[in-house]
Image (cartoon, rainbow, N blue to C red):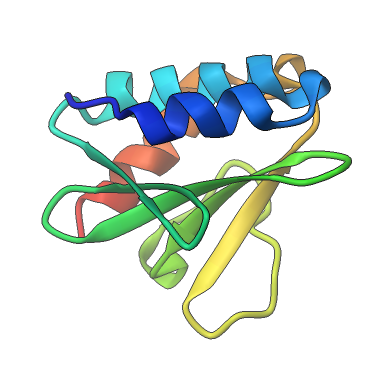
Amino acid sequence: MSRIAEVDTYIAESPDAHQDTLRALRDLIFAAVPETKESFKWKQPVYSTAKDYLYLKANKAHVNLGFFNFDKIENPAYPLEGTGKRMRHIKISDMADFDAEKLKEIIQQAASF
């Protein structure tokens, strides 16, 4: 587990309403996949094992929990949104609306490819 300062800064500079969500998702990612490496690419936190599998992006109204190679995630508990060829995301406005264990399962699937 390696947390980096650039992501600490990204969270601190994100809208106040999303900082707790970003921290909770970051913790959940490391709990789900302890061997995850954290980096900062494309102006956002990116998470990888052998390859990039997940990113976080703070927007005005929500945080995107984004997945690379989303098509390999089977039966996601929450709808994956977006129209990109290789990426999709889950919009999270309030962590209370999501089951952490279900998100953890999706994260683990994404990291296994």
